View 1: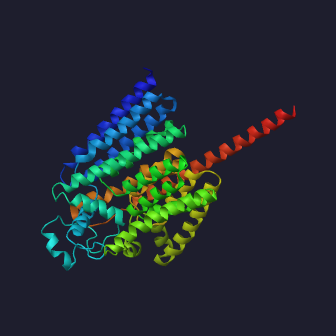
View 2: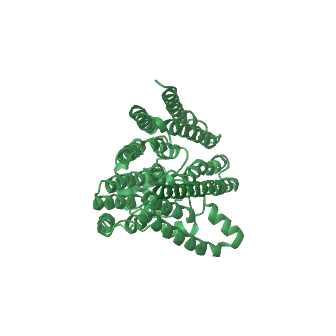
View 3: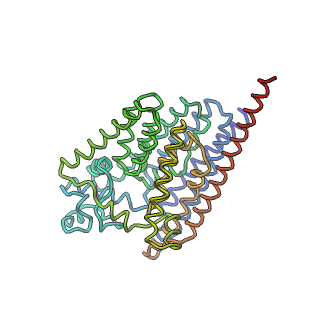
Length: 443
């Protein structure tokens, strides 16, 4: 075994130890520094991921299998860890139980009089309990299926489903990278702290959307455009945000493939919402409340509100959003689909009034197809936003600090500058190579 291979295994083992340490953090007192320690684990995992990625440059097929196995094991380890970084899961399972009790979570909020009987049967979600749900129909279906198992078991069942989706994301991405001869980038998904922790600890529904995107990319690469569109549609039925991926996905493909992709997505989305409407639900929920009143984790919107006032925010978001979508289509049309998809999804998250680390889960799926410092830096710095959690647990006051937004914004600027510099260097090198080739032909 070479020195590089030994280092590869040591780094994989270090990643697993860091993952296992989350159990010690989770069982600490709620008013201690659990989120701060969680951020430390995130950075340790990030270092391990970068190390494995570096050693994968000359890795053998056996080492790629070790990377894949490490990623799968990391996801399995966290199935039983308590959820302590978010209150979203409590809302997921409350929605599921409400459906089983004959309530419409798109209309009835947890504090509504209609839900009074449910409060004695089911754990009450402590956050955002004044508004109906915003989650699409397929997500609500998974919540309800998990809630069937009762208050004590439903959390484990749901987390097992998230782990299965996360493993599927990894396996499908690994197959895609193998098809494209990009396995050297496997660690960016297999050992991604964001995918491992936001799936294993936070158990966020975004992991299902990431799995849908991984499946769509694999199907598209194999020429199955209609099924690829259907997979994107499934992702939209878990989380609305990935719908933006259809813009570069459809407009960047050849006409026949574009029509098949759009048809597949439209059929699945229309079918999902159609079934929900036919069952008597009103699956719009509190989406507009989300857009109008919730604010968190957005350096852009925070800066615009500070410098130009709240009234300027929609205009700035609209202009930047349109510019980002145009850039995504241009990249896709230049046969750089992964770059186009990355730009589209990143743009929506950047201009959104609310942004949480787990929103980046689908972006991580795209990362090994087109590695870039912007997404890597963002995914590394974004969990700093968890700083508010310990303060909230100790005082009951939601008062996010400004410094995480500043750190994220600085990361954006530095990483984007690096990417631009690298792209210019590559363009210059390509131009010099072309000139040399022409001169050689002239001789």
